[in-house]
Image 1 (cartoon, rainbow, N blue to C red):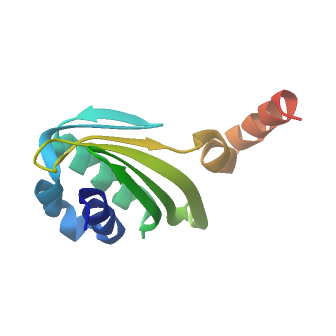
Image 2 (image 1 turned 90 degrees about the vertical axis):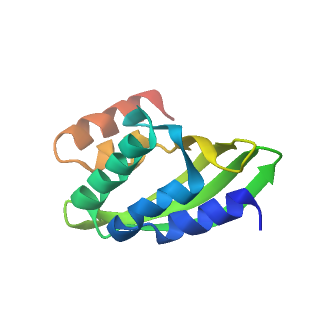
Length: 137
């Protein structure tokens, strides 16, 4: 099993109770980025996930595909949770970089925060939808 497949399997099972297991997969100086966060360090990464669990639980990551070549990987996933009490699903992709020991040193999530988050919010969602309609076709 590749490093990426092991990490993806962990992400599918991550919960508030398993946050400590990040230590098995991630370097202590890991860099993490997504549309709302940019942190360095394993404790800050755990904090991002803990905050996510508190705000939008219950959370489920479903890994759809994993690609790895040398020390880099791409994980295609689907995230499901509750946003303001309503079902919320977000498709996304993670670019993962491993060190020579197979530990994650960079984890960057790519997903459309405008379409899948901001447009779901009361008031601001209408404005974002209007912008999308004005810019799009």
